[in-house]
Image (cartoon, rainbow, N blue to C red; front, top):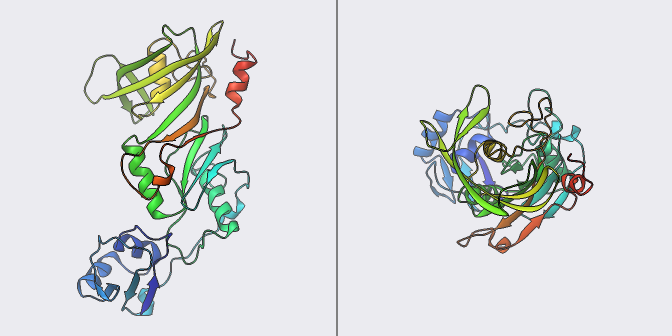
Length: 314
């Protein structure tokens, strides 16, 4: 028999999800059976698999110890770099300025050093994440391509992750980008509308003015901040968030991003001039992160902006 008191970091998870994350020797089918038989309870009462755990809840599992071995924790994240450019941090979230060339999540080639691994190491060494007792793993709520820099949102607990994910989906967390494109834009500002089709095999997208089968609408707003010669510095606000939306949409209207070898004219280059430089929280309801409502956060050092001011885009 095991008894676990739910911490703030583990609150907000479903009973079944929490148990599956915590114990690796308990088969899923057996877990559901034991819940039905009332051998798994919350606060001494019958529970359901989808019941949401709250901070302070006591989860009792009246099962044999050999069915409740704790999942082995791996510490590969301690090999990650300690280089973490933190823009803002509180008890729930952390805003990180990801540099160009760094991955958000591990892939086959760069498994050890990435932003999520650096975040885990930072919180572990700071004493805010107990690997052994917490079923929640610090996570990123959004991701940015390796060759794009900008702000990523890290969640320190389950409730924060769910809230941020929901608010990104409902567009209540507004994302602004800086980019440099070829040519002088036709207007000072404009809201562009088109349709985007994704090719999963090639990981590329196609933009059309009219809707075609499988296409999704995209809305991209730009404001010209400055320009010289054949380069325009733009602020982009996304009203929809599709794969490669900014790059493909601007290329579609004849103003591809500098350095974009996939959708632009700079073939062989893959450091597109794009930076997710600002976030604004615009919540429409009360939620665990309401204290952030109407607040803006911006990256302090942006190489793209400095390069533009130094007239490097020629």
